[in-house]
Length: 112
Length: 114
Image (cartoon, rainbow over all chains, first blue to last red; front, side, top):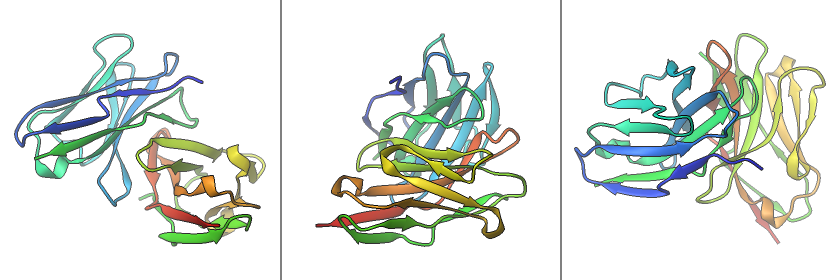
């Protein structure tokens, strides 16, 4: 069964550093997403991406965040200057449209 | 704004017993509804989804859910729980302009005792 692949599985970074989280969505999917889950809290929507542009973003997704699809397979989330409160599990997801998402296994980001 | 409420933070059931996890949603239009399961350290796996049609939806691993518009509910059920079902379960509603943004509930942690 096709999978969404996320790398790395765990990343530790110092406060103020830039991080890039990487995802390979399912190849015939058209919509791509990032969600995050702070430990013990709900899974929260960050951003959706379609046709090479952001289609929707949440209040969390401020100027410190950006997404990119640099080639035909990768989808990245960049956090420019990490804060302690950015520590969370970040999930990438994809789908073809209004159907069930396929989520990746997540990247656990720890900001120290 | 769309929201999802899962009233039970933890539920413990005996292996072989039946299970019902509650989910209530708030959404103006006909909702797209989902149940996901998350095992520790793992991603989110789709159990089942409701878009339209038959209000009783069958999913993977023997789970089913029933959409009740009058109660704004989408409860997840399983007739006989297995120890491997222990995990956290999330209900979600498709929101946003195209229904593509998922709004999740807080989750219910299921413990299975032998």
